[in-house]
Image (cartoon, rainbow, N blue to C red):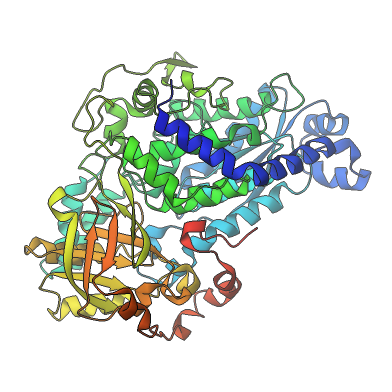
Length: 603
């Protein structure tokens, strides 16, 4: 039985979305009726499509007797999370052949790493890369050669972009295949300590590099619970992964077996068989509410607030910040994974993982058990974990009790009664805060503003000793319309250092902070953004700002008349309009929606 709060939000989303959802489903039904029909392609078209195939594959595609599986991959070997995908096409093709099908690499999509571009000009392309990925995947699937798709992607913008593309081809089945996290390295508390010491000038660059290299040390996803691992959690809770597959380490026999099984499931879901399950039938209102619940219950990445709104709208489903706020009141926090704790995702998996988490949420009536999945069952049957029975992939019941309640707890004994994210409202607009990583004594901050127009200005002020006081650091003109809404994670060690000196500290910005939002209260995604006339553009040094994460409020202590009577600040953004490819993205900055609408540049 689904709790009333969950059912109410789902019903509200369904009613609000009915016109756009019906229109979307109508388009998808028309696509289903018209293709993919390789037999309808001209002889030259079809010959182009199978020219590089092996002989038996050519014959299968000529006659239309076999399903053709598209592989859309975000492989590159510079990103540790995506390097394991180099081996996946061969595994998938072999599995497809064994199942009587064909698989082709339909195309690749870009994959950038926010961890590498953090604090650099390239970060200003990061958010927009989601829409580039969606468009790139659409090009890959545009050839009308395929009956189903497997998507290979993990990190921040890659999975949301692929989900958007999957829904553009919503008449095709789609299975998402993760590559898994790297084994645990240097502990997260040790890494965070070195970062703070370096910010304070008490550790050398060599010390810091040694710590970072010991943390990020092998192929696989970074092990902290940032956007990449939040993506994987959501793909499982939304039914696009096989059960228990999200956090199996790469380059292991179990990982390879899951990859092969995912490919064969995708083939089993095509219209050529008896279990046709297009992705449009999986990603409905229930799936998106389930995704939000999983995000809140695990204190996941704030980036997913933006991405879930954008992903949902790609399928005609309209989510709002109010939906997140209302669900957060009903969903308890069940995990402690860094930065919301000291454990990493490997520890989470050892404690019971996604199977135990989903079991607990289902048992508490916090997930829709009847939501469809790619596994051929509903979510009700997802409390499972995969294992190898000899060389054969098998599934067993997930643990019924947490094996480490310092990392993972049942809904009856949560870390807190409400979810890990909150929506803030007030005369500065609306914002999002990751509350799960912020200690209760730091969730209410009232202090004077220091206003900056770049994170480098904050860094300079910190180095000059100007921030040794209670303060709310306001970093504006960081929004999508201004400079692409970069993450400002490099500010965390500096502000944490100020807070460690027993000062009240908060951050207020129209930029992002990512899944790595830490122990400093950070009101992010402030909307409207400064360049769009938001009140954040009217703030001045010395204004008293009150942030109350418990009450969900964000205000400057000025009368409405005084605030609105101030002129909007100006900022010269010319330096952000070119270099590192930024000139190619001016069209995106000119046409992007606000953060509360998903920061979308398409549709």
